[in-house]
Image 1 (cartoon, rainbow, N blue to C red):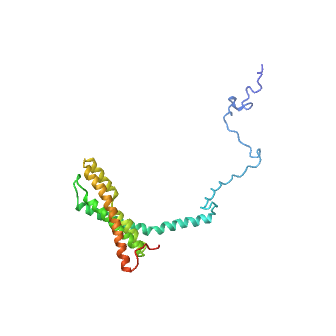
Image 2: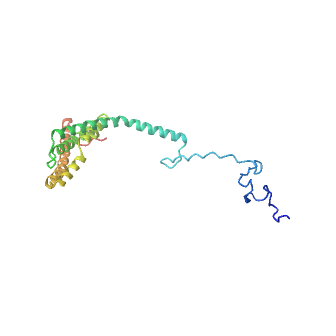
Image 3: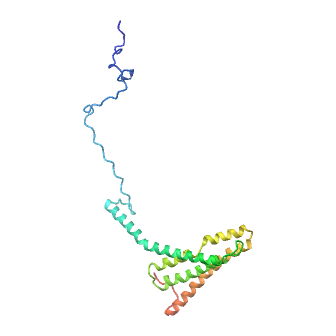
Length: 213
């Protein structure tokens, strides 16, 4: 007696998913069945970034821009070096003053007060001399103004001293220190700027005016 299913008993016939011995074997694709294969396409390069005027930069333009950026960074290294040197010297000088003129935790911070006021006074002289009177070498102003005086004066210690005095219930000293430092620093930079400008231009026999840069 024959079974009605024509595929029964034939392991190579019918649906491969019916459980035959070759059901899970992957089918080999005929390389000529689907025609010639399409060659893989190369990954497209990312579009060139636009320039500042909206036009696309060619690869040569991008190379030139990269070289210009590297040259710009390298040209800043001498300025960064003199600023770092001046900052180290200024911070060391401030540390020496604060160590030599130490104040009790609840006392008036005379060392920091003097350092900040003296630094602002010196800044007034430096700004007038090297921006209005003389044409200083390119590295002098960064060394003195940004480097040395930037490291010599301190805003963070000024704020920390004010907070500590207020926390220790020395509100009067905290207020005097806070307002006194601000007013004295502004007065110092204004006074030294005016005096330096007057003295320098008087010696040159010219009216006190800002030099055209």
